[in-house]
Length: 277
Length: 304
Ligand SMILES: [Zn+2]
Image 1 (cartoon, rainbow over the protein chains, first blue to last red):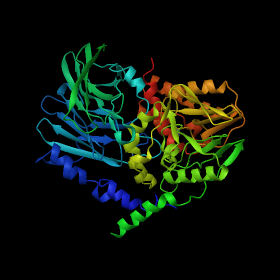
Image 2: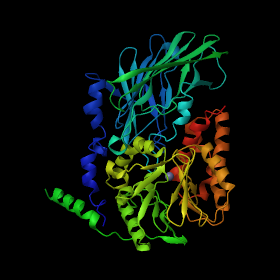
Image 3: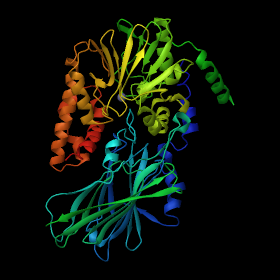
C-alpha cells in the first residue's frame, strides 16, 4: 500500500509553510526580511545600478555561483557604498554585506553560495547618498542526492585559514583590476539532528573579511553560513603603484545554524601578496 | 476532521499491511540483488532508483541498502522473507544518500543492527533536516527524523560479519563517492558489493573527492572479483573491464578541470565546458554532470 505517498499535499502544507508557490514568492521578503533589514526604507527595483547572475537551477546547491556586476564607476563623490545579498528561503537568509570604497574601482563581487530550496535571491545596493536599488533572480533547487552541505569538509579543515590571491590578467596601474581571493574554511553550517543521532554540532564560519591595498580599504564584508565552504570572492581594486594586497579573515562559532545570539569569538587569519604592475 | 481521520487510519494500518515483494534476482549462491532503474529521483519513482539486496547465511541475513523510502524498505523486507526463513541480523548502509538508506525504518526491530561507515552518523546529522524536507517536496514521501536510523555498529577501517557459513568483510573507504562509503565483500562467492563506488550506465555522481575516488578505483582495479554489484547499473562479471567507463569519465574530469584552472577559468565557466565529450556515454548525464564538475573544481583548485 502506498501509505506514505497518498497524502503528500497534506504533509507538505503542514510541514513546509514557506514552500513557495509563484504567488507567494515575495511573502518572506515582504513580511520578514524587508522589515528586519530595511524598515521604513524605499527600495527601487531596477537593474540600473547592479545586475545579478545566478544559474536558473542550482545543480550543486552547495556551490551556487553568484555574480554581481556594477554599472557605476566608483568615484569619490558617486559610488556604491554597500551591497547586501539574501536567499529568502534559506534557513539563514542573510548571505552577506559587502562594503566598497571609491578605491575599489568597481563594486563588482562574485561569490559561491548555498541555496537550500527554491528561492528568490536578491542583491540590494546602497549608494553613498543612501539611495537603495534592488535586483533579484530566482534559483530553482536541485534534487537527487546533492545537498547544500558537502560531505567532504576534512580537506578544508586541514587547510583552515590558508588563503590564495589570484590576479586575473596583468596588473594595470590606475585601472580597476580583478582579483580572486580563495579562503580555505569549511564554513560549517552547524547541525542539530540530536533526536536521530545525538549529534549536535556548532556552526563555524567566516564572519568578516577585510581587504586592503597599501593599507587603504578596498572591500569589507560581513558574511554568514550561506557562503559555500572554502569561500571564494572576486572583486576589483585600483593600484596606483606597486604595493601589498592584504586579506584579513575572522571566523566565529555559534551554538546553532540559525541563532546568532550565542557565538564565540574565532580566529583571524591574514594573507598578503606583492602586486607588481 | 476527515483528513485527521484518514491520516490516523493510514498511520495505524501501514505496518500491518503485507507489502508486495521487491523483485530480486539471486546472482549467485545466497546473494540477491534488486537492480534499480536509471531515473532521477522524483515524485513518480519516489526515490526508488538504487540497487538494493541482501546476503543470506545459515544464521543471519544481511540487508545491503534499505531503499529509497520506507515503503520500498518494506517491499525489500518482504523479498527477504519470501527468499528465506533466516532472520535479518544486519542492515548495512553503504553511504548517506537517500536512495540507499531511506528504507531503514522498515527494518527496525529487536535483534537488527544497523551498520555503517564511522562517518555516516555525522553525514546523516549534517544533511538530515535538508533531506527530509526534500523527500516531501520532491519525492512526495513523508518521513520524519525517526526514519533516519544512525548505525549501531560503526566501521572504522574494516570489520567482519559472520552470517553463519559465510563471512562478510566490510571496508570503510577513504573519501571517494562520499566521505562515508562502505563496501561489502563475500569471501564465499568472491562477490564485492561496491554500491556507489561503482556506476555502470548511470553517470557517476561525485559527492566526496575526485582524487580520493580515483585512488580507491586504482586499488580495487588490482583485485579480482567474480561478481561486482554497483550502486546503479547491472551486476558486473568481467571485473575490471566494467570499471573502465567510470575510470575514464573521472580521469577526464580531472584532466580537463586542471587545464581549465591553469587557464584561469572560473567554476561557472568550467561547468559549461568540461567533460562534454562523455555526454552520450551515460544515462542522466544532464542531471548530474554539472554538479560533478562543480564538486571536482572546488577540490582541484586547491592543488599546488
Ligand atoms: Zn550515492
